[in-house]
Amino acid sequence: MLGLSLIVIAFNLRPVFSSLSVVLPEIVAATRMSATAASALTTLPIVCLGVFAMCAPWLGRRLGMERALLLCMVLITVGTALRGLGHVPLLFMASALAGIGIAVSNVLLSALIKREFSRHGAALMGGYTMAVCGGAAAGAGLTVPLEHALGFGWTGALALWAVPAACALALWAPQAWPVRPLASESGFVVRGLWRDPLAWQVTLYMGLQSALAYSVMGWLAPILRERGLSAETAGFVVSVSVLTQVATCLIVPGMALRRHRQVGLAVGGAVMTFVAILACMFGPLGGIWAWSVALGVAQGSTFALALTLIVMRSPDADVAARLSGMAQGVGYLIAAGGPLLVGLLRAWTGSFQASAWLFAVIASALVLAGFGAGRARLVAATTTPRGQS
Image (cartoon, rainbow, N blue to C red; front, side, top):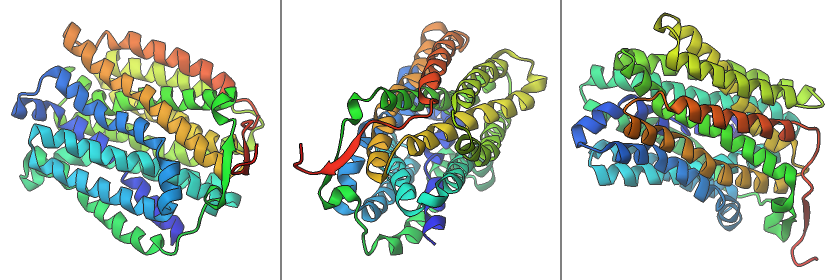
């Protein structure tokens, strides 16, 4: 039951992002939002991922990981529901609330998997990343059809994603008692993590692949609509891409675990992601479904590998929790620059073509980070009793 609950929670960690992007032109038209404000709206929850992920270990110690995760699901449910009111200030507040809940959940889920499923970590990480991708695909592919079928408009279609979040909240509530502490709750502290080069390489890999992923999630549908596809078709293209990630996410953790080094997976995924993005932006629209599948394979690989590397490079659950907080905290602050710059470049130049240069820079840096993070080593951080020097 614990594993199923974690998977259902994971499903709810991305619809907030993917559902917004497919109706962003309608939001801009209805609210008369500027291009800069639209860029900020797509970026705000990602900034929250970075800022509040670093608070997750403290919150897990304070409340216990189970109760902290319950609080996160409350925030995600409320934040998602508030988007249905449609007012611009509430859209930003709702995005922030959901982003905070998702940020802390990202970190706590990795630590819980390390603690509870140490012998089957790769398998559960595959299921976890599959659920995350499934939620993102559902948000991208079903939001516009729901908007048309139910007649709720874009506000109601966005608010409907509070329903699966509420289901996850109800499913997790019985798991929140009693609370099992982490080692650090019993007086242990992790030392040396922020000075370790490998920890920074893992962090950069997480952040840079996320910058590409959230740029695609936030702007691929508007890019395709600008190229001539309908809102529904553009959403389905993004959904197909993300659904393809599900298969990759099932395969890559096991592939990584069986290899002594993960450099080939890390670098290959980065290069393929860049090529597939260019194909979606500039390739013939007749091949868009093939490009979207290739993009899904590539981004599913880098995403699953980034999460798996956090577990593989950590010697114990305490270090895994801190490395996850570091990688997802600093990493998502890096990632926030991706969709923000795509939107700003669109506002400044009048088209999305300049974003290709941005993607080239990010992909090149991701390749370099992959060479470091893919080497077979453990983070040189130690878990010691609190107060011991």
